[in-house]
Amino acid sequence: MEDKCFHRLPNGNKMAALGKAKVFPNPFFYEPSPLARIAATLLQQSLPVLKEGKMFGVLIVEHKGELGYLQAYSGQLEGVSDDGFVPPVFDYLQPDGYFKTHEAEITTLNCEIEMLKQSDDYAKAVKKLADLKVEAQQVVAEAQQAMAVAKQLRDERRKKTFVSEDEQKEMIRESQYMKAELHRTKKRYAALLEAAESETEEYNKKIAQLKNIRKRKSDELQRWLFSQFTFLNAKGERSDLLSIFRNYYLQHSPQSVLATHFVTMGEQATLFPPSGTGECCEPKLLQYAFSHGMRPVEMAMFWWGDPPKTEIRQHGQFYPACNGKCKPLLTWILKGMNVAANALETESEQSIDIIYEDHDLAVIMKPSGMLTVLGRSNRQSVETILRQRWNDNDTPIIVHRLDMATSGLLVVARNKQANKHLQAQFKAKTVKKRYVALLSTELLDRVELPKEGTISLPLCADVLDRPRQIVDRNKGKSAITHYRIIGKTPLSDSRYSEAVKVELSPVTGRTHQLRVHCAHPEGLACPILGDTLYGKRADRLYLHAEYLEFTHPTTGKRIRFEKKI
View 1: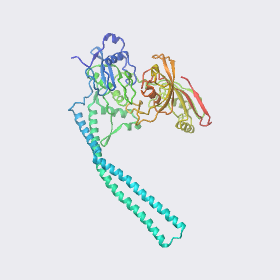
View 2: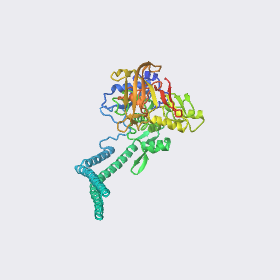
View 3: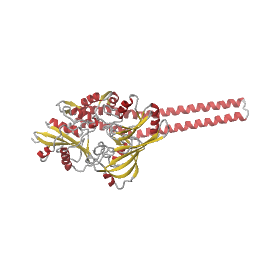
View 4: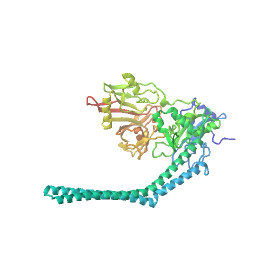
């Protein structure tokens, strides 16, 4: 029987001549092969315009001696026929199935909670309590003010005229009466507030009880769902999501990071996958291939449609697998396969140029591809090189950082006093930094874009795909960049012959700030060339820190450094 999910490549023999990968591409860092691009193009030709953008993927496979491909989409998809796509690893959306039935119970609880919150009686009780608090504060404040005025008058009377013993007693009685009256007022309002709070507390208790029931049911349903997602790996082993993630976290996470993966389930803490795990293209494709006797050859994922409001996605652009949901899972699924190393994690021998050095600090030129500080691996870094050079485990003290892919000027401290002084300058924003970035010539097509301007887009981490950053106007931290478009410049790159040079001066120093501000639709809407996270691949990330100016911590003199790319 013919497999409807297996799509033969046209002119199979000619396609095979294009060459198959000797090792399976690393899903977290890869360049789509000609075969993968052809399969992706064939899929794209069949896709309609989508209301919301979606990630799609193709997996080149060998099946019964033939070369073909499988296709998948992440999550759920409306408006596109499922014909020809691999099915979900576990279909939990059956109308009368376990998941939908219990989901309906949770939905009912949501409605009950909302009805209580929106009820007229609850609103009246909340308003009554709020009004009573304001009234109590006002009445008590007026009584205290009256006491203060009366005391002032008594004090003035004592100073100006003779006060008889009877008058003195009368003033004491007045003071005592006003204090007692204030006490009675506070006591009266305390009783009124207690009664009003009791009234609202009844509603709050009911809402809290319903929320606790909802959380317990939601946790139980999530646990059940993850236990139903069972996967095969290249070795033929079978396991569910809960076991896969638990083992991955325990094996790969240091204790400081491990704690962030714990999710409270009822009264127990457990290592839990993020919501939606197992529904991305990559695990769906590999699961289908392994369970149907197909040999995976290579894989590629691309975004189709408009980008989300927060994430940076380019229509038709290829992307690596996400870290949060896919890394633990794919690490297990690909066990037993010959998988290419992740170039971002591979050791490479590089050197740094020391531009300036004294007893307090050093300014160095960091090459693209080198870490600033020592990471989890033993990959070479500025920190390790300088530590060896100075033969001192306490130095260097890293004052600021550059992304691994970014090149340019970096200042490091050689003692705690210098570090404190330099850190204060960065905090006060008196350090001047200027970067140069090379962007696609498509930037010049945006005729409405001013040649100079300021980008202000608040940023925060994408918790499901670190180190990616997203624009979030509610939770993000302020991020401000001044830009100036210089113009076209020739470029010696295997993919690009020219680019547009842009000067970038960050006011703040958020992670990936310049990269996101260039790529985001509300920024320059044009990713920096070579940005594999937010744009397209090139020979390197063309972002360079070319200018650095600060005050020397010992001499107090302003010093400037410039190093062109």
